[in-house]
Image (cartoon, rainbow, N blue to C red; front, side, top):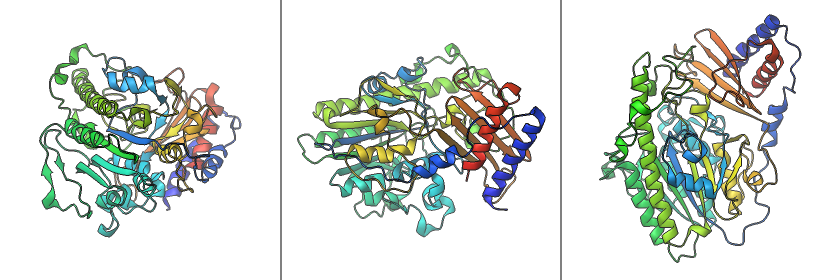
Length: 499
C-alpha cells in the first residue's frame, strides 16, 4: 500500500465513524481550502524593490528552544534579557512552527527546510535523513541554499556552529567560517569542531575538540567575525547556530544554580505518562527520565533546561554587543529562531518527537532595518518561511515552486495572515518499513482550532483543542457534539492536504 493510502484510509475511516457516532452535519468549512493554499504557494517570493542598502543578515539559530523560552514572549520565569531585547526592538511571530519530521532527529529536516525553503517532503533523504541515504547523495541539496543565494549576490557569507546536513550542503554557500560542528549533539564541554576548509573536504583527521563551553565557543567565533567587518562595505550573512539548549543539560555556573528545582511549578499539562499511543514514546529523548514521570525528576529537567537557555541568552548578548560595538547594528537584520521545541514534562513527554505546541512551536523574531519595534503577529507560519523572507529583505529572488512564503507583508502591515491553515506532520519509527514502532502523528491549525490525529499499533486517536481557551492542550473537544462540525471539517481538510 502506498504511504499516502496508509494515511488517508484511517483518516477517512475515523471521519466516517465519528460522523456516524455523533450525528455530525456537513463540514462547516471548505475541505479543499488548505489544498488550494498549498498550490498557491508556488509563486516565487521576490522583493518588489531592492532596498537602497542591502542589509547584513545575522541568523541566530538555537537548538531545542521551546517557543515560550523567551521571557518577554512566554514563560516569565526564565531569564532572557538579551532575547527579550530582540523581541522588544523587533517583530515576533507567535504562531511559528517547524513543519515536522520523518524521524526522531527533528533538527536535521528542520534545518534542511530552513536552508532550502522546501518542506521535508520536497527534499531527498540525502538532506533530511543522511544516515539512510546513499553516501554519494548525503548533503546534496536539490535547490540553492540560503547562504548560496546570498553568496552569489555578493554577500560575505560565514558559518559558525552546528551544521547538521553534511559538508556538501555547507561548502557551496560559505566564504569562511569557524568552530564548525557537523552532527546533532555532543557534550557541551567537549565539542568536536572543524576549522573552515575551502576545499570542502572536512576529513575526520582535521576534527578537534574545542576548548570551552559550546555556546561560548560559537559566540567567540561570531564576535571575531563581527569585529573583522567593522568599516567593511561588503554586506555579510552570518549563520550562527548554537547547540544549546539541547541536552545534556549541563550549564556552567552561575547559571547552573540559577533555578532551584523545588521552586518551579509543573506545567498545567504535566502527566506521568502520555495518554495514548503515538509510536516514539521510547525514543532517545524520552529515555532521559524514568517511566512514569515523577514531579521531582521533571522539575530537575526544567531547572536544567532554564539554566541552559539563560546561559545561551548571555552568549547571544555578547554577540549583540559586538554588533553594536562594530557600528553594524543599524544595517543588520537579526533573526532569532529555533529549530524545534521540547516537551520537558508536558503531556508525559520530554522530547520533540510529536506535534504538540511545546514541541512543534518555535521562537521567531526579526529585528533590523524596516522592522517595526514591538511588533507581534499570530499569523500561522513555518520556520522555513524565513528562506523567502530573508531573500526578499535583501532584494534577492527566491526559487519558486515551494510551500514557503515571505513573512515581510505581515511585518510591514500589508496583510494579517500568511496562510489560512497549517499542517504539522511527524512520522514515528521507520514508517517506510512499517516496523513495530511505526506510527503517524498529525496536527492541523486553522485559526485557534487545532486538530490532532495519531495512529499507532492499530489505534487511531483524534483530539480537538481550542487554543484560545486551552493553550496547554488539555481539554479534548472532539467527543463534544457541539464541536462535531468543526472536528469533521478539520479531519476532511487534513485528509485532503496530508500528501
